View 1 (cartoon, rainbow, N blue to C red):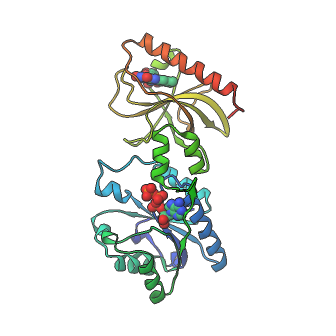
View 2 (cartoon, rainbow, N blue to C red; view 1 turned 90 degrees about the vertical axis):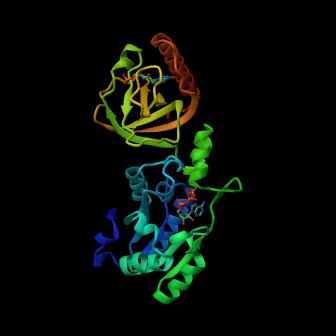
View 3 (tube, helix red, strand yellow; view 1 turned 120 degrees about the horizontal axis):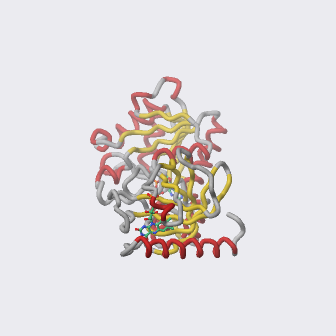
Length: 312
Ligand SMILES: Cc1cc2nc3c(=O)[nH]c(=O)nc-3n(C[C@H](O)[C@H](O)[C@H](O)COP(=O)(O)O)c2cc1C
Ligand SMILES: Nc1ncnc2c1ncn2[C@@H]1O[C@H](COP(=O)(O)OP(=O)(O)OP(=O)(O)O)[C@@H](O)[C@H]1O
């Protein structure tokens, strides 16, 4: 999959494609359905598929403090889109210039002059351009004028309700990982490189892999039953996501994973941590001894859980 950052990096050979536009945060089953349609249309027209995304996402630009925590950072989003068979991603910087672009200028500059779009696939609620003035009817008129077809994908629902990134975030916040998995079509996971920590974990009897988060806001906080994908092997464990109030934190959220019966060296490796069940909230303990007792209980709960389950 090819990544093109910014309109100025589009070349004549990028013209002519089947495209869709959106945030695609989490690449959930609604997104997957649109991407499937995109692949089908692309095969019919013998053209590559292109997904137009924004970085930051529009809400992060408008209200950085109120925008919801991302399900996936850009790197993970690109990996998920590649796994869906997307040929090209055009990543546009969402800034003042883009925000002020009218719907017709967006169509002209991005879709017509930039991408030479032949077919556009959008969700039924899709809106774009300054003040969200562009909608499906607008795109259809533009398509008739500029020579591209537009199709509105049917809404994908689960249990009678539309699947959305917002709904995945709500499922995670309420600890409903089974629902998150049904919305995403896979368990919710966070990937990152294992970094050196304070080396306190060993002292606590639970060595932990510190997974670099590289983002300030995470849609989860607390202690979880997890499994980590390490060189294509699933290893069960327990994880804490939070500020570690008991030890001297650095004011940033950390993801720390203790893997059951695992002794390998993970430093520098990129691992993917899948979340299966919430055990408890993160707490401030009055001593390291109390924290150790709590972590021992978390590990015992994880062992009991995995005993009753098929191996992850
Ligand atoms: C299963 C688990 C549960 C944890 N729960 C808490 C907690 O409730 N409160 C807290 O302050 N830290 C908690 N921690 C984080 C520990 O403080 C942290 O792992 C320890 O300080 C080791 O840090 P280090 O790897 O940087 O040495 C937890 C860690 C694990 C693995
Ligand atoms: N459940 C769904 N069924 C069909 N199309 C969808 C569904 N969810 C999103 N889409 C479409 O996928 C494209 C990208 O969606 P986008 O990520 O912007 O929205 P979303 O998943 O609904 O997120 P949010 O909850 O943040 O609004 C848009 O065209 C959107 O209409």
